[in-house]
Amino acid sequence: MYLYHFSMLLVTLLAVVAVAGATPAVPRAATAMYNPDLFQGDIKGIAGQEPGKERAAILGEQYLWPGGVVPYVFGNSVNSYERSLIISAMDDFHARTCIRFVERTSQSNYIEIVSNDSGCWSYVGTIGGKQRVSLDSNGCMYKGTVIHELMHAIGFYHEHCRNDRDYYVTIHYENVQAGMESQFNKDTYWQYVGEGYNYESIMHYGTYAFSVQWGVAKTIVPTDPNVILTEAYDKLQMAQSDANQINNLYRNQCSF
Ligand SMILES: [Zn+2]
Image (cartoon, helix red, strand yellow):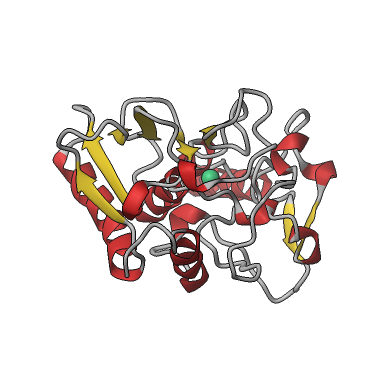
């Protein structure tokens, strides 16, 4: 009996030590979004840009969706639960912006949403023909992630890569994984669409993006010490500034 108690105590102590010394694992929702081989983690390409020259990007009207209408199809891999989640993300656009996602009939330019490709990613703007939005069943099925990727598809970049971001965040390159420094390059030709920098933007990454040690070594640190950054997948809707920027970018396309 005494021995039993002693061994239980030992097991408990070892468990406590193990928890205290453990490094938090990177959530799958984050690794799915922070793809090392993609531009800024989740951008597959940019409308009108040649591969490798993506940063020389500014969206002209020809890369927006005409009329603000985005035809879409679901790949066969997308199950009914995933479809309803994605449609609820589209509803955020429908309720607050002039963008309309419509089921494709015969349109030649459209997005194909799949859940069996690797990671969460999109192209920026309309590239012509069928373009994929990848929402991996393993890690991307969060309303915030879906809104984030759809916002890329209609022409938006990342908030933390805005040209004016250095006033609002400090990138701690010493905590960034080796070789991933370029993930934090600013968008030189980023286009101002009427709203100031917003930490709450659905297009803002969290504080451990591409960190050498998730949960410990911060890579994106707000200049305002009171701000706590959240991951896109932890958000439930776009920020009001996101909605305003969408309506501003599409002001010549949408009929209000
Ligand atoms: Zn993104």
